[in-house]
Image (cartoon, rainbow, N blue to C red; front, side):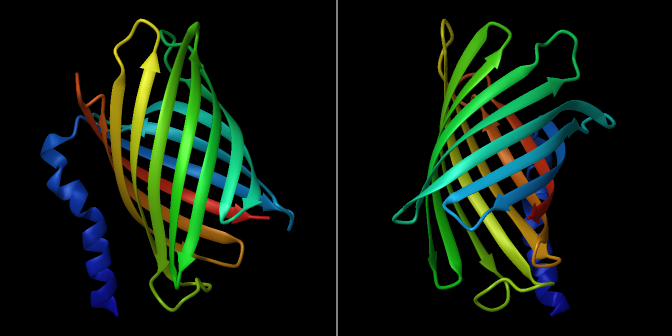
Length: 220
């Protein structure tokens, strides 16, 4: 059993080791996430995230608050809307407000969950408006049995493509790949760590970032 989890751990951190020489930014982003499901078609999610860059010491970049509401429309599908406010720790850059609309199609195949997510973001920074269209394919699976029980681990992974458009600017393209591991501490609380590699604006002035996302998830 110890050898099994050691292999999982090595697999998760292999991207960190193999891309250490081709990463422009190392990011650590802890978050607290709360989900409220009132046993109806509605579901509400709130999150607070804090982003830090650790290239040369630990430097805070911003903190953001997110509120999302989604509605189950049937046929394994949901639609949702959300708003995010980002406080940037740089006096030379304006704060950001982002509005999001999304459609999600998710199904389980035995113990494997597959989800397709389509998003449209409107990002407002000062007087600049940026549109982002995003598609993400994600999956998750428990490491033991067909259901996730207390104290058990699970694996999650995703790949996402982003198209970015802004007036008087060339369009941009981002690509993101992520894999992580989580653990159910109780029926309501999960811990999750995800490594994510991002290619930002890869058709022009490419920037490569490696994210370590650390999350606490609580369900009411």
